Length: 138
Ligand SMILES: [Zn+2]
Ligand SMILES: [Zn+2]
Image (tube, rainbow, N blue to C red; front, side, top):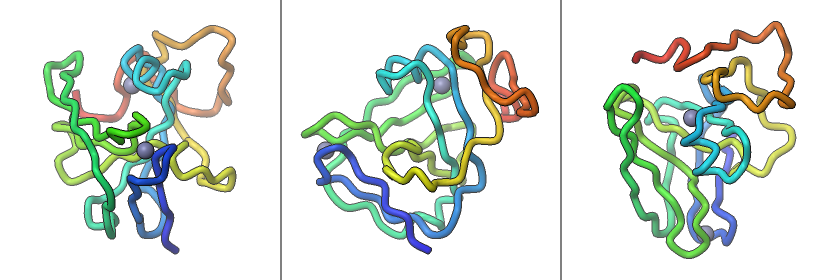
């Protein structure tokens, strides 16, 4: 199965093979600013699952709490951040779950940066919820 992630205007598109290896909610303030929502939903895939990237993307590099870089790629026309590469996960590509625009997309199974969660956001108690970066290497 091929899944297509697209920016709002549609000029930037990624084709991804199969299912992501991880889907996680991130409550961190960077994700809040970057998505405009109160949490981000991130999907991680091996780089080899990315079949194509079409269209123009602008890269914006930020550093994390732990001082590592994260390169966000967004559409220069409509501004949607569609994908990213992170120093902590050199073999992976991150894609924003919402850009698949697919209500049937695999659900998250964990949450990180619980310490920044808006209190009205209630997640299933069974999910591992980490106050910081969770299982990802610091
Ligand atoms: Zn766009
Ligand atoms: Zn985050």
